Length: 497
Image (tube, rainbow, N blue to C red):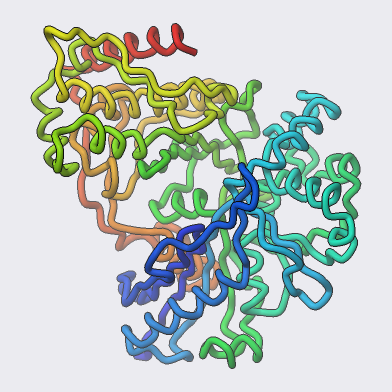
């Protein structure tokens, strides 16, 4: 039987990763990423962040070449292609489908005033009821910045797109997008179930700037002869899946249904939960987008909580608080000698910029409750991890207020989820079971492609071979201790926030 391979790309701001998955065994046959050092981000002015889309394309080709060689794969063995990508970026192309300027990526903050003005002018009720978010610093607001500040370039724009749309276009020569993508750019009206004409009209954008909509799981386009010659892929290979990095991370962890949660604990931390009804947070402390399986027949929204001061706090603690030369595993052992609640020491972890969950306040990090005769480095190390968990739980309360039930959290076994203290505290406070898996974004994109191509009948078949590495159950005997520690942390937060 001929081998069937699924190709997944994950277009991040640090690198582009590619993976080949054997469609029949579900196992990863090869994976690679480029560049091997972190990709450059252009910051011409404070608060700006841009990347050249051509760089993504070149890195995608390099990653692809390496995995094809590593897996000894032939072009005609690739059955389908899926794409995951950094969310909220803006790519502008002309009629020849050439990028007109560097992409304004997710962490660029120049468009904040444009989103805030639209929120005021259109009214919070209108925006929240239709967009489920403030226009904020998302793709539409970034385009408004281009319109006002680069008018000669703006008139040359044929299509605007997200980073994943751009890579799909380079592969196929066709510009299209998805409802999920439009929603993350603030171009989708959930109340009317169509493009958000009212926001386009407010900004003065012609609807023709948006690409045609294709389903998330479908034959969206096929590899062109030109791209085949450039990449070594076979012309006609279908592109069958596309999603932003956080919805795709949830897909990678088989999170599709209401009440299911995906989480990550890297430099920043994310809790992404699926909601089965249209709803929003009136204070816009979390963001709501169309999940990968949202369609006319079933409401599936992804509610995104992002905590900026997550792994970066743990890294700061290692550099500045922990004994010199200590690694993260030894930090965890050090902290394990301290009781739940860190003997009253609390760390408020918001030292990495404004936090949306705090209504965009920038309160910085606070270490509170230290007694010089009682506490030492171990207490602060533990309190830092507990503080990160408590910030997750604080945001999860907002999600619960929106109607989300949280009883199971899926995560990759990486970063902070390698820490027993972090995992046990999160399970202890939330009451949720935590399941840890071996997966990543590019593998998820490949399996998403398998669903879109009809190779898998559904997500359960696609992820039947997902390796579950660990299950952490809440310890009922310690629940009150965890909740008391969380209550103390919240009282400190209220005093400082």
